[in-house]
Length: 314
Image 1 (cartoon, rainbow, N blue to C red):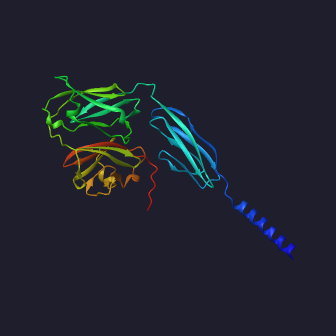
Image 2: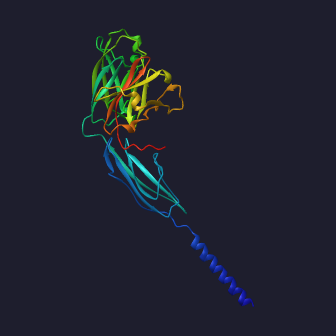
């Protein structure tokens, strides 16, 4: 009888060991994690590629977050960056890959022009110029004194990319109103200690608080990027849409309205949109000049091209 009991006990022990072995989770395996290419010039795109098995969770740092077990992701690092992939299962396994970022071989250069009370960037050669590395210098033309601090220049985004300087961005001056009308400065844009753009700027006659709105097309709408000398009451804003081929005003036909996107329907704000409810009635490629009017005066404009392929969801 004792032999039978011992045999049963041994069998149960073996089954328990076998079952625990079957239920044991495998250690994650990172088969591949690499950057292609692993060396780029500033502003270029690289791709992360990875393959992981036997993991319940996979994440990549530097703002990428949770990712599937295998895949790829485009990245545009602004400096040499090491990416870490973390796979979690019965244990945690990590792998790293580094993208080396070098300065462009082509010398950057930007073209500037005065537009009323600010300076607009109207051209950019090798426009992968980090905004954080740009310095604005204002030299008084008559006295040759550096008046940068006194003028208070700022860079305002106008192309939808706040990392790099681009066409449509603007340089504004906080303290312009304290200087005499007609005062003249040599405005220099310096990048990594080198002048990459320069123009003259003449203090215009006020008012210096005139609003100006920077906006850009984003697929089937126009997005407000920057408001200079705001805030603006949305109820006092109006839109006109002029057909760029026929010069006909087609605001009503397009169904143009301002759509709130910043949570404040009373004030025009950054990320608010100009949308077109009747865009599907027009053919792809049709273009309009969209003007934003405030108190009867145009304070911003941009072109809009019908991208076509619009799907109306009821």
